[in-house]
Image (tube, rainbow, N blue to C red; front, side):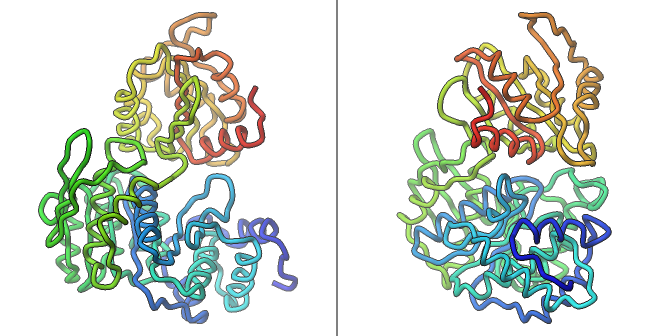
Length: 434
């Protein structure tokens, strides 16, 4: 590249067009550039993969370790509003200047190796962390595990939060096939945490084949509790009288247990006290994961975009108590199991506000509408009707419509693609909806 971009926006625009394929699975290219850059970590590294629950688990680990006084780097993807969200050092997003510096460094060593947007930015953020004098690094897998760019780093502890059907074109069509891909982040002789209560045999077999130290939920760690508090039990450590995580949802104790198992496995290198665990769980924040906004009508933001996540969202909505009507702002990628998502929510949602999304691989609002009709959801757009389906060209427009019709005791569930939630968040930030 002759003249390097000077701003983060310019860099990201260039990177989006740099490689012929948006997703190009494999580690050879990205590992080659990593070696040229000399990226290595002197602190413990935790890699977190899984179909759902990755973001929550990463956020809990970050919060607990920061409350224990450690300097922590956290890499997550995708972002909701700003790219900088992907790289956090001690809870603060990386600055534009810091990212631009690292992008230039990667470009300087890339040579003739072609990298995808995700590979290039992953290398830049890894180098940022390697230079930041951190006590712990937490890396969220982008897609799968075995062939994800994050997997060029050898983790001290790996976590697979859950295994379900998603990204079938890259990972396989069954839980067994997908489980093998997720287990690719495990390492010989290192702790390998699986938070899925029913792990695929392929995951267990792979851990055994490479000699990983497998921790299974229900066998090596578990939780118990009542309405006021809960307890964690591990191989050699108990955490009693814990407050529930501030992240809402019925599945968060599974995620919290996996996080605490990872910290138990690292307790000689990263000791964490009981109060620091309590504070970390109570203070953790993660936008877009069953996030209930203050005010009326109730607004729930959730990036549920596969059937497994939709089932959890449905359970969490049912646990919220009575609301006369539920409005859905829904947009999704066309390569997702949209019918599977709809199946879990069709008996909960009264009014569907379907939205186009600004990506070529997104399903159109009209395609989503057809999926609803095929699922037996009757359309009746008459004023005051019990069930309606309407289409919009943007999440902001869909949300504005839902807000205009919902009563103060109703609720609006914004879910599906990250772009759906991000579109509504951006509209709220800019004050667009009335």
